[in-house]
Length: 118
Image 1 (cartoon, rainbow, N blue to C red):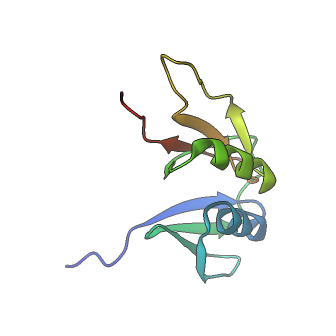
Image 2: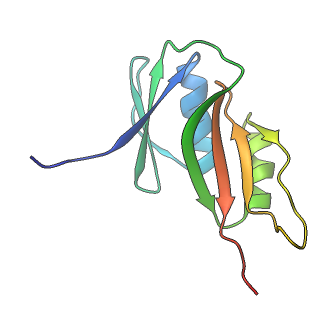
Image 3: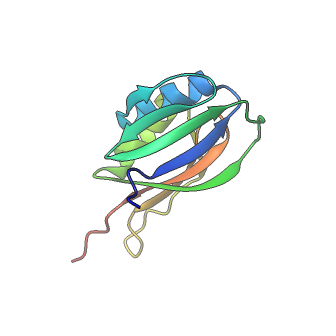
């Protein structure tokens, strides 16, 4: 047996909006697009989006996206229709490195940036 791909599935109440969010937000490439199952490839990872999900305020996914510039990612998050679920810390002791986010379907995920060590 050989594993061919690993996919992470999300449920979306509005599958088209969810697909478009991950394409715009992370530069994803749609390789399959239909209500029952769509696939968006981001940095060689595949997010499967299944239509017909319930509209929830927030549901944890376990997804994490490491970015080169988290501040820029937070700005783009809002532009693409997402939101922060809590403001990230940004102090001398704890520089900005983690943001908890939510997509338009209520799927909560993390955006991170590698900490700069002095």
